[in-house]
Amino acid sequence: MTTTLATLRGLSVSYRREGAQTFALRDVDLDIATGGRLAIIGESGSGKSTLALALAGLLPPEASLAGTIDWPGLDHVPVAGRDIGMVFQDPGSSLNPVLTIGEQVSEGAVRHLRLGRATARQRALDLLARVRIPQPQAALAAYPHQFSGGQRQRIAIACAIAASPRLLIADEATSALDMIVQAEITELLDTLVREDGMSLVFITHDIALAAKLADRIAVFRDATLVEVGPARQVLARPSQDYTRSLIATHIDFSAPRLIDERA
Amino acid sequence: MGEPFVTARGLRKVFHSRGRDVTALDDVSFTLARGETLGLVGPSGSGKSTLARVLMRLIEPDAGAISIDGEDWLALRGRALRQRRGAIQMVFQEPLAAFNPRATIGGALDDPLRIHGIADRADRAERPRRIAELLERVGLPAGFAQRAVHEVSGGQRQRVAIARALATRPALIVLDEAVSALDVSVRGTILELLADVQKSDGIAYVFVSHDLAVVRVIAHRVAIMDAGRIVETGPTPGVIADPQSAMGRALVAAVPRLDFGRDDGA
Image 1 (cartoon, each protein chain N blue to C red):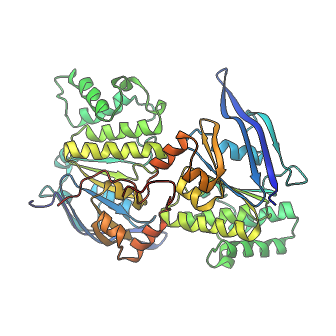
Image 2 (cartoon, rainbow over the protein chains, first blue to last red; image 1 turned 45 degrees about the vertical axis):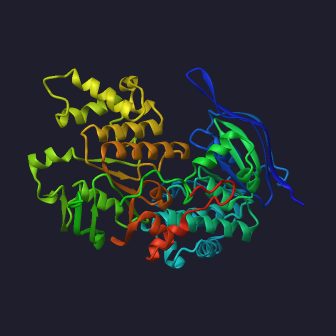
Image 3 (cartoon, rainbow over the protein chains, first blue to last red; image 1 turned 30 degrees about the vertical axis):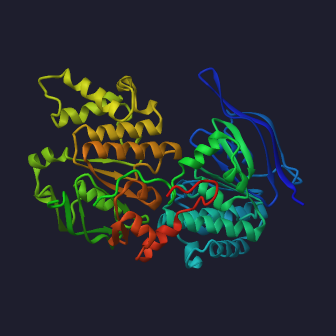
């Protein structure tokens, strides 16, 4: 039996700009299954990142929120960092440049799990090994700039899962990476979520990545939820024209070439 | 067909970083015909952007030669170089960073016309007409000339970047991840615009990308880069169907497949 981790009902997020109210999300009904993998797909301005921030309780103070987010799968209101781990697009700006990797990865465990220094250090070491950072012992004392973009994203993932969250939200976590590293990070997320039984919300503009990782897909456009359903169904039998156009405009090896062959 | 339009031979570039030597380009050679697109594909750090910048003469190589239209491109200096620069233009990944944020679109397009003397200095009235033509060429209304660069969408801004590149009537445009930052639905229309411009004007492209699927759509030939070297080159469909290098195989495997829900027209 599947249980529900989170239930969103009539969720709207709006901002006042120059006297006018603009909606970043409008009247969204959505469930997140415990242990499920939900992909949120959308283009710029679709509201997909606002949804991530709303779930994590990280909306800026000027945002006004209507509707409800309930957490039937938890016995308390979730705390970002403890119950919800987040991975963002740019690990260069989500990691602190002047703290060692060891300090940053163990911070979540120290703060939320009340681990002592030595235990937290051991946990950081284990986490770095889990996200496959080479020579994790040496990495503890190193700084973010000493790692490549892909390795920094692995470290950011280690930070996000340090307190054993129930929900991992990855917001365009692979978009800034090259295709090969993107494939590696996607696989890492897949493994971690499976091993720890975490729920995953995977936010992306890339419908093929969503297809690879998610069991459910929710399509957003202009602050509204266009359609949601099992991944296979949304991709094979989309109910909305917008979803069809997203699938049709996706470029993979079967997309038509735009040039004539040359002699 | 005579001599290739662009011939690069034995290009080498070493950067010195934190006491270490990093070989960004290692004996890189390729040719490009008029009206042809060469895709440059590789992971981050493989040297593809360095190669693009060497071609633009934004970076000088340590060794090697580039001939463009039969002329020794690396030997050009001063006035002669400035005069020829108009023939080679560049479009970058992030159009917002590629413009003066305070410029109007018309101003951004006027700069190359003025600098390269395209529209005659004596006839100032010619330039607004040229700007309107350029905007129309990239599918934007002439009224956009009055708007600020930051007011328009990312896709429209990239169209302006292409219009700016076209202003000097170039024979070669180097596109460095030019569609990577765009929304999926916009990406296809920009690729169509590029293909269309190439067909009508016979412009050659060097199309730099980490995404082999996008390169397959637009590039006649592809060169795969790994650690500063071109490790494989050939017609794009052939390289994708049967990659010979380890990096070629890795890049093909990294493209996520949307393998259901669409009729395969390929």
